[in-house]
Image 1 (cartoon, helix red, strand yellow):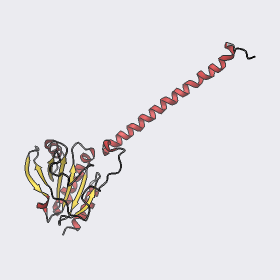
Image 2 (image 1 turned 45 degrees about the vertical axis):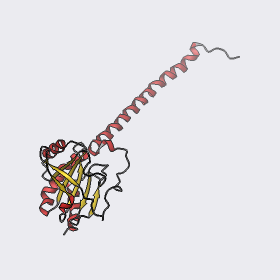
Image 3 (image 1 turned 90 degrees about the vertical axis):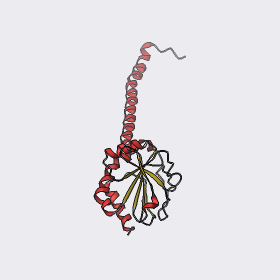
Image 4 (image 1 turned 30 degrees about the vertical axis):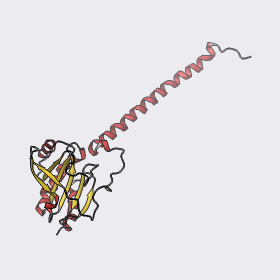
Length: 213
């Protein structure tokens, strides 16, 4: 018949169990620290690329105007440095000139990051060659868009469509920034859904300009 274990008999097992607990606690703490590091790294990367889009599928251009097709005509409101309307501009009024149509928002981290790159490319390389840059702010008050553009020293045309009443279904913008390059004949030559730097902007503009005699 099995006999009861005395306190002396149980002590070694209990001691072993107690000795095993600190490593388990340490492992749990380390796992928590690693998880925090991973989340912090994702947040840091996301701040420059639009954290709200992390985990989403790759942006698709399927719903946008297709390369090789005429760009849908729209009429947007150009604003001044205070967000006040200056005039209405119709895309078809720009026929005969290459147009870089840029949809953006000052609330969008990648849009904010590329604004100085756009300005540098436009001022130094593209404006002298006749390219029209039309940057249409979406989903924000006109004064917010104007304030950011002014702080950034933007000299290209800024338009505002806070409620998407102007672009309607013609340009179903789901990701920011979205760039649509239109040649002098009004044909879409390139669609880009990404933050661009000056070098990339100039390279794509070169192709657009080459197709726009």
